[in-house]
Image (tube, rainbow, N blue to C red):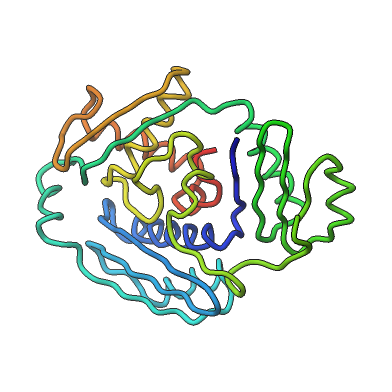
Length: 260
């Protein structure tokens, strides 16, 4: 049993804005320290950014407008806490406490991911999808039920009828769709809106990739300041995660669909 949401779901819009701001931070300085939270809905977008660098308010507003359309933005930028920043001053060390797991994806999860991408290609609007054994549920906004039933005759289509979605009728926030992003690998740490020094990003990605490679579940714990995790230097785990992020095209791309 698995749920996926597409990149136009309002929570994913929040994730994408946060990811795009992290991308901006990496274009601004080499190894930024940044954490972004986004709350969006009903014509407003609130963004709080803790960062080590200087970011352009105008560029952030451009990101919000590109992803969310015409909304009123409220942007707060503050410096990262000095004690937290000092943790990384001399060498790359784990940025937070955490527990993490990686779990191999099932055929069902891969099947729904492929279907979600397919539906989104035809209907690039807010949508969410569930696969539970033989039961497939498709909730797709701005789409005629008659057409959806022709395309997916065995699915349960929009049980409450046709609907419109997105930030004009709903609210979204960063890291609220982690099950859609990570399947059974989900833990308390969110993937989005953070730089690579944060364990929520790098260790989550590392554990997920290791599970797919080995076919076995992975469980990892870490403490803030750790220099070694899972028998590897923390810098090596960060490099593995960085390579993955670069291969898919950046933090905003990660935010679109998560890890699968």
